[in-house]
Image (cartoon, rainbow over all chains, first blue to last red; front, top):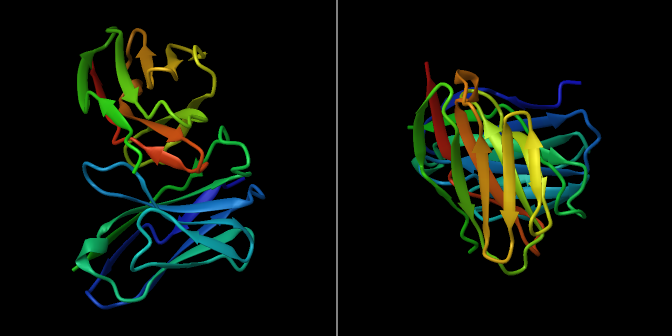
Length: 115
Length: 111
């Protein structure tokens, strides 16, 4: 099993450009999450999904959109990138959050630089 | 906004030293406390999840305790090794059932 994978690993964008980050998991997990990691701050939840076809906002959703058309994939889109979106983006998945002790499994991260 | 704080921010110890760090979290509406280990250029990996006051978990030389009444958890590393060098994250799960992460404690173990 590959676990949670993310593409691309690194990307440089100019302000105003758009891009999509792809997260894929092969563990048949129901729940998937997108976080961003910034210096001096904990991982912050952008959006999450509780199942195929559903998405919900997290703590910092502005400027991002997501889609979960297939259970194994969770896409994070930036329609018009801004320098404030320079960050490392992590995807995670879990079987369910019906149980708060459920462990989340993380991908390797995507480093995004917006100039 | 939930406040999860970790201290110290960073720690530098010699090989063989034992060390510990703290995670503070809201004591109300508590469901679970997670510890993750995050090596540079890798993904965070789950170490422990604890749900009950007084819980203690152990994995090799690493152990953790939980006090939900006062809102803190300790992570202990006995006889630190260079391969223990990593950032240790704690995350709190409350009624919203989503993880709120602390900023982590960065541990550097040198020979």
